[in-house]
Length: 232
Ligand code: DX5
Ligand code: ZN
Image (cartoon, rainbow, N blue to C red; front, side, top):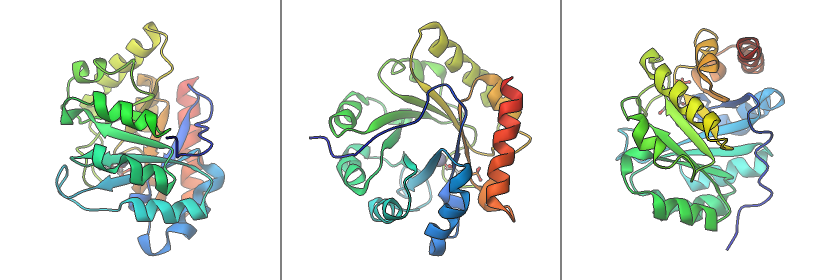
């Protein structure tokens, strides 16, 4: 049964900016999202279960509330131990994409179930997770998310040691002619944007660099400009 509606992720291979609402004021989410919407392609929604990562954030009810206030593509990053248990609630809540972590092991069933629900599916890898764990699923997913911090918290420092893995994923996608997007998440700001874009990232998630700025829309636009300059 397909439950998600009208999934249009936008053009592939073109730079997308995805503000992470984790850094927004949860008491004013709709207002925070409205501010950045004119400069945003997707909205990145960090779901944490207090088990896969040592933090708890939000779940399907908040996604459902966001859905009522925005038309942006909701890119749900599931930092949770049992994603299979929650795919249907996220699809019902209006998520368009879910990204699950490679560290969980065998993901064949979760990938198949996400597709059956009409969700786009991504594969996330922690900074110390090897390229091989991504490679295994590269032709089965729509997106690869290379974490440039250890997941669990916003506002951490970018880990430049992940750049070679981002390049390796970009090269593999290219060589195999796959329609897979390459997202980066963690410590993305004006300084790190050129590095990840040069490595081949096409979707940039940024939390504190956007919602921590005095003008979140201007910050979003600046990150896009820096990304486009580096892509040339
Ligand atoms: C971290 C989350 C990130 C986080 C990024 O676990 O997955 O999406 O919000 O925040 P910044 O951009 O502040 O590093
Ligand atoms: Zn995230």
